[in-house]
Length: 89
Image (cartoon, rainbow, N blue to C red; front, side, top):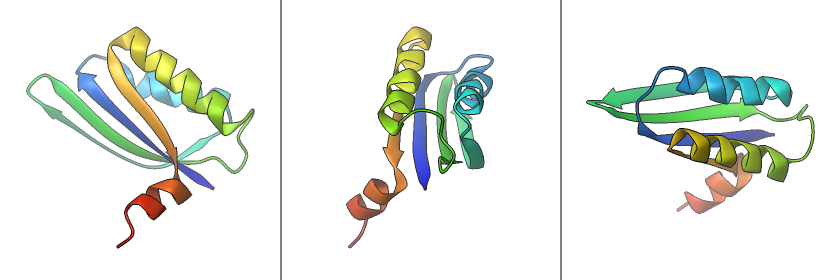
C-alpha cells in the first residue's frame, strides 16, 4: 500500500525534512520524491510505502494537513488506489 503526498506553497528551508519526519515517526517509507522550486513557490509530490504504517491512514493525513497549516503550505495525502482510480481513463 502506498500514499501520494503533495505539498504546495511558499518555499522555505526544511519542508522536505518536516514531512519526512512525520513519515518516519509513523513508519512510512519514502519510495519516490520529486520537487521543484519556481521562483519562491515550492511544489512536491512524494510516494510513500504505508504498508507498515503506525496508526491509521486518516491520522497520517490529518497530521500532515496540520503540519501544512502550521507552515503555510497545502499538504494533501491520498491513498494510491484512490489516486489511480481518479486518473484512469
